[in-house]
Length: 318
Image (cartoon, rainbow, N blue to C red; front, side, top):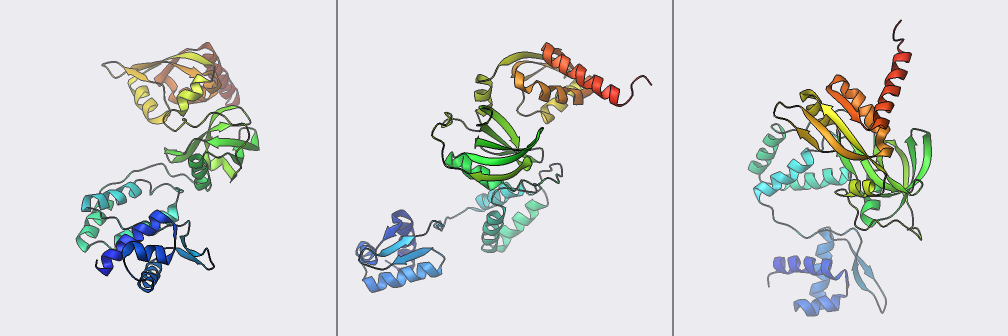
């Protein structure tokens, strides 16, 4: 076996074993302990994070920050990696921004010149525009880590009542319309809530509580239905103009199903949590005459109260 091939297979073996001795690897690869020691030193120089321990039970082990083995990419796959990163470039904050920049730089520098040219051309031809947001969301990595490891988070959240401490179990994070959101089970409210990540001022991962909600099967794809299942629901019926349909589809997420007619107008007939009445009232007021809310009575009343308060503020009738 050539030395280059042996080093490649040795790198794979090291990541597979995690801890080992020089003698064990020497026997496995059919070389002397001295040769294996030199090979391990070369892996260390290449960036594989090995740690040696002395003593009767000593040996080598791989540090937690592992280096992944080399992976071969086609030109299209390489372009796809840059394309995926390019799609989020207008967001002020994204998880692992520093690591993404470092990985792409390494990737880009080792590509042939013609492939670099294709990627550069792509950057000037494809873009994903999002509204400019001045708010920062520095806790994205903490929230994502907690969601993956299914751990609770203690945070300070700037909500309607001001900054207050909350304990949550994050489901995940997602970006929409230039902002980041975190659906989570709120241990204070004993229910699922949707939090704006830029309003989370501090966040720290906690130890698992003795009693915790059943969240093992909850993820971004189904958390809304779990929330609805545990909430008191009410029927909603809204008529939408053609423009109302278009604005509803771009502005509301997650959204009830919209049904369209041939002329482009449509209507919404669904069920929503009663706890979201105020949110829907604000949204449909924003659509103005493009929406006509018929049901539920609580939503119609909430819209009337908001409009009356606005009329009083701006001196209607004067």
